[in-house]
Image (tube, rainbow, N blue to C red):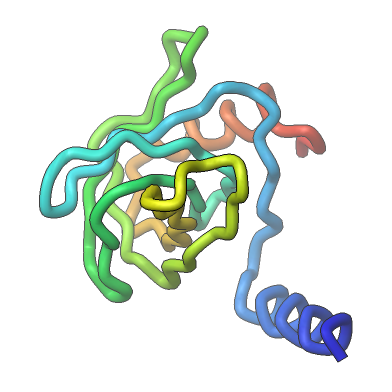
Length: 132
């Protein structure tokens, strides 16, 4: 039963997305400005959206946020990126302390300018485990 539910969720997700998400193999981070500034670890990215892991106060579904996306060991980054929270999930993680809640936030980019688009494509091409 569990495999069927997971397969249905994957099918629904792929139907909603028009672009493939690329899992990142490098150290990509986002500084998120919602209620307060948070540091998040980027998990995957596409030309239309991004997901990241974070701890702290939940970022509400439907909320518009601004973020800076950067790489730990590279001077490339995308600044003032605007996105809308599409989903926010609690992630089970046995290695963290019981009181630490790990969240996965999935976002859809708002309008990206040309420089932001180029930086997202650079991120995918140079730091994903399965580049374009």
